[in-house]
Image (tube, rainbow, N blue to C red; front, side, top):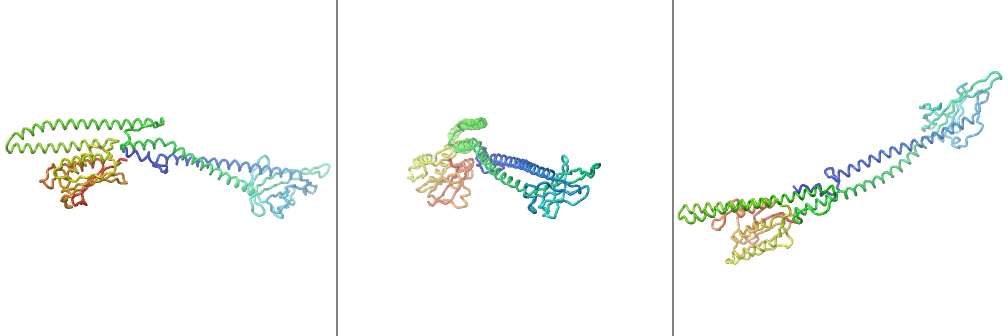
Length: 469
């Protein structure tokens, strides 16, 4: 259960949608990009409207100046009392043009020098305050903004009669100037927003990293509890994380209490069963004949079965305790000394080679049970030497190898070793449950038991267990 909690809490800032930090960063980054894009579009539109307004105001000013300078004569021809001060109306195809079109009566069109012998062609227009605004095409096909106004000039034909002359005054300006100015602004706006957006995303990354730091502390604390380096989660946590830490600590404490109660019940059960069996064994030994032998045999079989299943039940509870940790070297050294005394008459050489810092992630009693059974089995078959050595693996496991110089086993026989109650040689004392118990307990911790050929010439038993950090 707790190993599954490590994945989301221990994930680094490698953004992915299955990661909490990845989701926060992705959502914030998308929102930032969208906000900057919308803001940039709004600012660009406002700037374009402002530039377009200034451009239209200038066209309006030039149109008013053109109308003020115009003076029609009695023949209907329009002359200008003064020349425009803007030289762009004088430069050929400059993009700035004006023209005066006689409407009533019809006559020759008066044009600016910049138009040469051409005219501005209107493509669309709309009226606004008696002024036509629209777009057109210049002499070189460039798009132009057009403003035009229809003006009536009264002309005194005779003292008794006035004629009215109608003219359309038109001024056009090159729209490329507006587009160029807007393009320059958009370029500056893009780079400014890009730098600003990168800064925001960097700030978001830092914020998420700092904000999720308490969760990484929880993950590291759970890893320490699981490795047996700490009994529970300690330290101060933010108010949002503190309830989670309290619940996890409560779960750890409850787990330990449940296992302790199970151990007590197992011990009570063992005591309540073994006492009647001891009475039966005593009574059976007092009865001569085949009946006593049969009862004694069955009682001994029941004892072995009870020992086996009680050991397995106790190991099953111990394997679920979070924070269990046992140093390997003291256990192996104690077992080597004990077995050397037990088999003292045979003068066996029993050595245990183990680094001082190596630890088993589990209960010490279970480690003693497994290593003791393997070493005792090796002593029963060894001629003169039993060697135990250990090694820590990079994948978080440790190997305990027990070698002897006994007769060894054939490959077919190795597959049968460790089967419950299986004894390959009845001449050697034992119940046949020792190696089965070792295999069962190792399996409860996610470990394994394997057999192979020993460099000493006999059998090698390799016990693989989880290693504590």
